[in-house]
Amino acid sequence: MPNVVVVGTQWGDEGKGKIVDLLTEQARLVVRYQGGNNAGHTLVVGGEKFIFHLIPSGILHPGTLCLIGNGVVLDPEVFLLEVDRLKERGLPVGPENLRISERTQVIMPYHQRTDIAREEAKGAAKIGTTGRGIGPCYEDKVARRGIRVADLLDPEALKAKLADVLPEKNFYLEKFLNSKPFSLEEILTPYLAMAERLRPLVANVSVILDQAVRKGQNILFEGAQGTHLDIDHGTYPYVTSSNPVAGGAATGAGVGPGQLHHVLGIVKAYTTRVGGGPFPTECLDNIGDHLVECGVEFGSTTGRRRRCGWLDAVVLKDAARLNGLTGLAITKLDVLTTLNPVKICVAYDQDGVKRDNMPGTLKELERCRPVYEELPGWQEDIRGVRRHEDLPANTRAYLARVEELVGVPIQLISVGPDREETIMLRNPFG
Image (tube, rainbow, N blue to C red):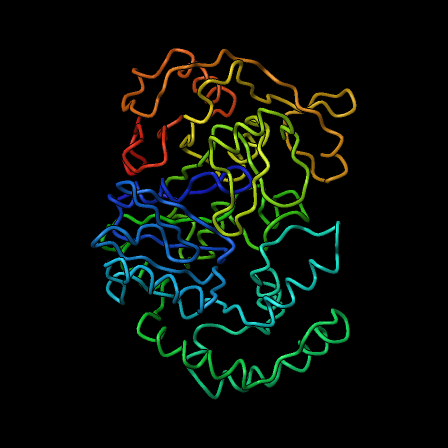
């Protein structure tokens, strides 16, 4: 049976949560492979809204096993709060449907404090992080001084690791960032308490996935953020601290790359991003306001207003190459209704030279101006449409042009926020 990787093709916030929720009906396992609670996946099911920051979006489906891979950085307090909120809504959450890799790195209070203090110190030059401690936690992982979930379950190991790392953390917080230090006990006591709640959920996720592969069970790999926030391939340094691209699914979940059979790229029908960094198609006019208002473009993690602009095919073509996309899922197509014309950026003009790929440096990208192609818009309400052939002719023409520009077939079309407001042209699980 095929396994499917769901990736964001832009700067995140493409609507991955809804697509993962939809596809989970055909998956036995759903695994989140990178990022932390800087992600926010919003689902609307039967008019009821759910927002997940750490728990995989497939948790709403009975019989599905949701996994948090080793590539994730876990804030245990946020995670347990999500668990409690689901239980309050009458949804079962336990070892039978949710497991955490023992190798997952843990976000500690000093990571969060460092993240916030750094951003404040940078002032206008700040990156625009969520302040959740994601970057500093990944830094410690790479520097081999991180604390993993397995360490939380061993009180002596946790105490020893904290005693080893806190002097350095406190020196940096106090002397460089002018921030408050931590005592060992104020971290150790609450984290040991949370560890006991996590203990029943901890497992070797790589082994679980290998067993599923051997049984021929469908696996859905859920990425967070988007391709152009990738630490290696994004608009560096305005990026996240992990690898949202499809290749990150193998290392972040503990499977071989040969087990990633299909890569579905999620594409918002326009483009958004949060935080700093260049954004060639950004609309700072009434079009941008329309996209924000009709698309409800406010971050589910931070509540920040998203920057909005026309669809950027240069961004999408890079994402197709970097991820090896085999299909596209177009989301929020309904938001473009009433706009006329609708525009697609088909190339960049960099100092009079046309280019159709993303520059490698910010300095170059900041000099790029979008080259637009205009298409006629549509006025018809498409939220009730469930078949491709029933979409307005101009809507179909817009979709066909996106396919042509990116060179990847569209397989899913979202015409509204609810799970049911979706047109499936081809099932990614085949």
